[in-house]
Image 1 (spheres, rainbow over the protein chains, first blue to last red):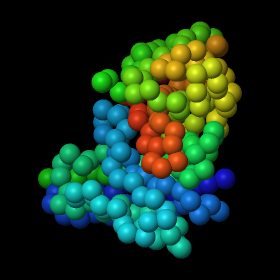
Image 2: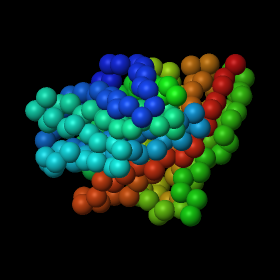
Image 3: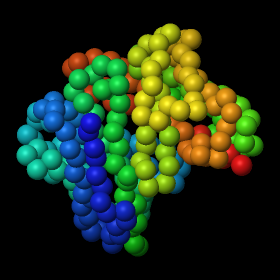
Image 4: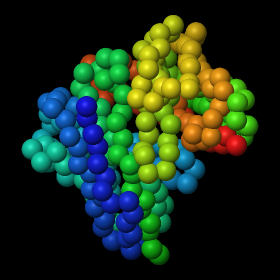
Length: 118
Length: 115
């Protein structure tokens, strides 16, 4: 079974600075997808960024980028120019590339709470 | 286009009571999921459905039942609520296709408290 580990429960960053959130995962599969979700106080789960395992190029979405290290099974999220609205809980998630039945589910890490200091 | 909606948003139950959570999606997605979120645990899959009329168990199915009589709706039932079922419940849906991320779209969540 796949596991996702987010070892840092909380992090804090100064507004306008850069912060990196760590995530590691364990899998025996070669085809899979990785995601970062943001959950603000409203509870809504918002997809921030996604990465396909067979793509070597790291995904970027505006101020958000990932450092995907497949051999190390590491998938960290970098937030540049942090804004007050970035304060939220962030979840790393894994999904198998075998998109049938229970394999289509997302496996989540425990999450990390990010606070942004003005 | 409302996406994924959940009813109700909040609910308080007494131990032993029953209730049904409704999830509806208007994106014609085949796959639907129910997750629960507990502090320090992330989200865990309760049940899922790969199409109308089909359901299957996830990681933590005990104490819950589901039904998917219509493609757009996925119901989660608690027959006899227990305090251990106090949680935030999320419904999600996705298309099913090999050449896409099959991104899951989440509802706004239901906060359930069982006293």
